[in-house]
Length: 480
Image (tube, rainbow, N blue to C red; front, side, top):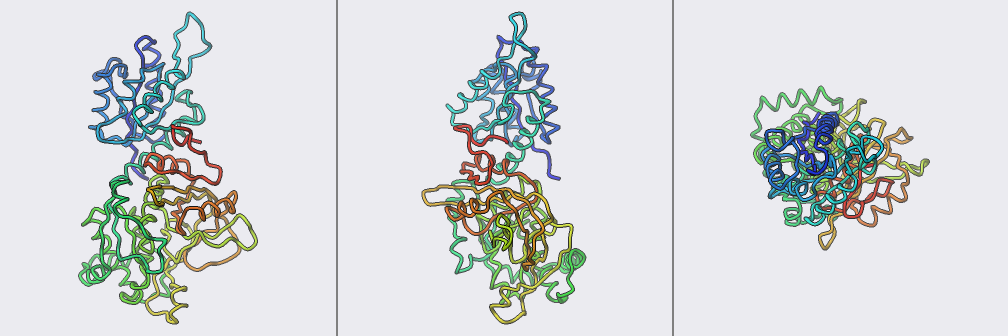
């Protein structure tokens, strides 16, 4: 389980409306956010009048509170009509482009002259306008944008927003290692390092393979033994010699040291053929285990693949693997093989896991030597989400998001695999051919809308070919 996401809450109110109604519902809104897995931070009575945000001065106090609390995003609740300028000011933390979500609270009952009223729907439109004037990106629930804190749809929106905020905070300013150059034949894995820096504040640490290999000779023996024993216990290694497993353990120790030394959030590793020829194993098992520990490791020095895995793992709240968009099933037209040589994180299955041989490389070189180290597994049945970040010329950043279901199907590909059923495989393939490379991040669970919202708040363009909602005018992706 990941830590709760800290979110700033702006209880927006306008003084000419009944403050008691606003105060009454503020506590319910905070409780709904907690139930949705968030850690809300909101001004109390000691900071603003009645703990509400109604004036520019109260907005400044709320913004400072959010800055000091290092919130990952801001929710603005129109508890009555709200005051649009203070609400927008409170959501604008200096120096940070925080994701913002809007919602309004419905009336207590039928409208009547003698009763107090909220008019939150009208006020919410004004708050949205104020945010647009300030070029602040925001989202809102598609269902019950104006509703009640106890609504299940609003709690779901809070949860999805929190997942998106976690991803935005994690990906912005991330540090990734590129270990070795991309394979010469794979221009598909090319990227622009400075473009990533400008877009996301991402820093790349280059690590030569020769440096990595030399460090394995100095790995601490006690740690190597610990990792060796854990590797042996975590998967069937009956085909793998002690010498090869020791090489895998040494590699994992050295990669862990690089993570600590450089503060890495992920890695993109040239996994063939220098590893097999010069070090004597395939690195897949060590990479998969690091991914399971929260450090996504992409194959073939695919840095955009690392970004995709990192973002998806944060919204899914579980590790994401890297797969090829692979073969259509020969009998089931909307089922395809989400496959890779053998690098899916072991936690993706409760079934058998085995350390295998890189069959494709062995077939091409005519020898088995140096090819062991892949992860043989099939992803458990159930929902899966796929996500791919890429960059086009002219600094366009499309992000493909699709959902499907891992199913049982005839066929036994080598390495790591899931047979995935999607709503329309032809539509998915068409979208991929129009603008995406051959790799995708894949994670268990249904979190496509949160991934799309995260992409939107990162300044990218979600592409949703399989039924997820499109962007909602200036407001960005809605919640489902």
